[in-house]
Length: 138
Image (cartoon, rainbow, N blue to C red; front, side):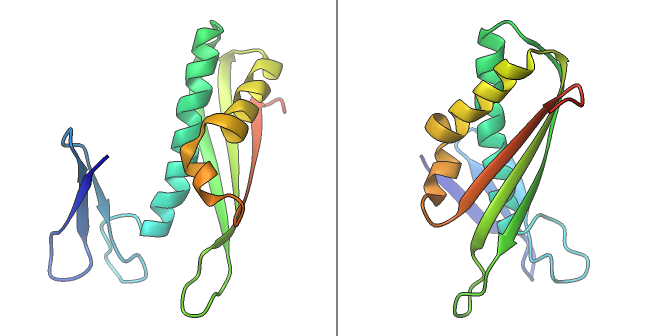
């Protein structure tokens, strides 16, 4: 796997691209008028997207119909010398559709316990937790 990163202004705005040409903008969000997500925000998005892909894949194989899928992700950071790495990450998934809640719970469990490479990258240093609701039922 290879990606590229290119600075695209005279400050902190970078454009990341993959081999297929898909792009994201990353910026220093502590500066006014930032035009991208911070690198740490992108890490939180990556955790949820990785598990989201797993969950959708598992539920589709089980013939569950997902009409809406969203997630809220929060990261708690600690000060470690000059850096501020994550200590905890919590992902809250919200699904709607014709979905069995127990199947959704099991899909999320399989993702975080077995399949999601992004959350596995943080083990054992970062506590990653998740919650899942289906049609506003947990």
